[in-house]
Length: 340
Ligand code: 5GP
Ligand code: MN
Image (cartoon, rainbow, N blue to C red; front, side):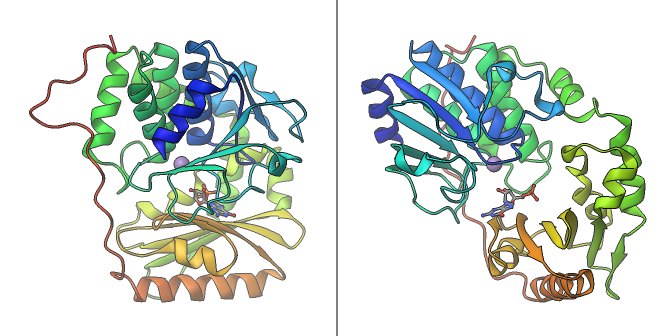
């Protein structure tokens, strides 16, 4: 709960923050937002990750301070674990021996922390870090604002996804007031890629297939494609969204070979089609419209299995009605002044 998180921050001194392997915009933006928040309170804090900061997030304030380590190798009063479904997701040895604070916006998360603060109505953990700033009385500095804005803009697909709410826009508006330049963030995150990303994309798009209805689409990235494009690990990020741009497509799988016979599946859907349930069936998880899992075996079998599961999900849509978000703002109320 938020009140427990505040009490912990107020009474303890040495903190670490971590997030999942292969960190993305929300994991890095939220981790670094919390980092600046704790520094503003005079706390000792570091962000530790198993994997390096991808190029797209290298300009985030504090990105250069992120320490890459395979284990929790120092003493902390508490370790904040940002947007992780379980204690294994950060990939850090020794994390299970720590006092862990689990901060997440996935409803499928395990309550693995000593303290668990989960808000599945938040579009990104970034929204929760913003709320924490307000609740604990830390001024939203430009650094904090840039980090949180990056979390919001990436986890909402530039405010396109259904997790985007009135609250998301109100927070984004305040972050701009606090000094964020949306065009600069967009340039850093979306328009600073190396050529290898497009070289890889042309190969991946050539594998695009669809079912007879045209509602389910899938594509594949092999180790060979990555090699021939000279691509970085993160270059495939975002590819899964291309098939979604077709009007009748309702569910997409992007299957990326990460070791021989091992495929990371990125699943996306529109509306009420629930891909989190598909991912959970294969030991993964995520949100209704964005989820992931790992599949092992021969390509033909993996393809048949995941495509069948997506077709079933599309046919079964309309089972879940989304939850309404909590509104922290009231329309009658003036926006808080202290962000300037
Ligand atoms: P992506 O396709 O971008 O890797 O992941 C999409 C969403 O699914 C993210 O919200 C992510 O947290 C979740 N996700 C991806 N892979 C896994 C997984 O292996 N396990 C769980 N629990 N969630 C995952
Ligand atoms: Mn997130």
